[in-house]
Structure formats: C-alpha cells, structure tokens
Length: 126
Image (tube, rainbow, N blue to C red; front, top):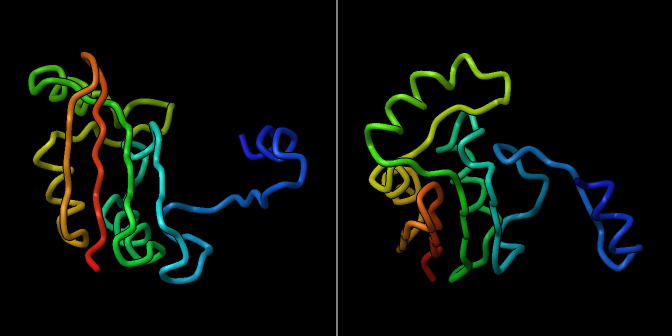
C-alpha cells in the first residue's frame, strides 16, 4: 500500500511505514487519524489507541472503520481468529471499542455500517 501511495502521490506527500502501536510521529502533530479495516489486527489495541491519542492535537479525531459482527457471530469469529493466518486478532463489540478508546479519548461515537462493519469516531479533549 505504501508503494502504491508513493506512486500515486508522486512526491506531493511523504509516505511512511509505521507500527500502529509505536507511531513514528511527534506528540500532537495531527488533527485527524484514520484507521480503516485494521484495528482488529492489533495485538495491543489499548497501546494503538494511546498512540493515536498521543499524536493527535487537542480536539483531534481518530476515525476507525472496522469489521463488526452481532454477538453470536462475533463469538464464533473470535474463537476462530487465533487459528487464522490473516493476522486477525479480535472483532470488537461497541462496548469493547468504547472501553478501549474511552481510556484516552474525551468523547466517542459508534455506528454500525451495513451488516458487517462499524465506524467509531473518538475525539481528543481540548
């Protein structure tokens, strides 16, 4: 993805590879951060949430678009995911995402998108 972004942007922006749990950016350097279809891959989602909070300026927003399943399907998926070779770790419920993000962010909204996705927006306090 990074290579494709470099080609597409043709030098108009710097593209870096980084670990979501160890972001290579200064504190409070961004107004927004976007995490699309990857939060369920993080071995330490609490650390990833902290890193996003750390690099956001006061009032900044973290937008997460990720997989979602209703409780029975989520239980089956989460039991199977440790055997997956795709790097999936856990499909989170709304309550779990609220707990993870609520440790750092002042406010959060969550909504389901279709049958298998959700969007969460967390805002850093001012």
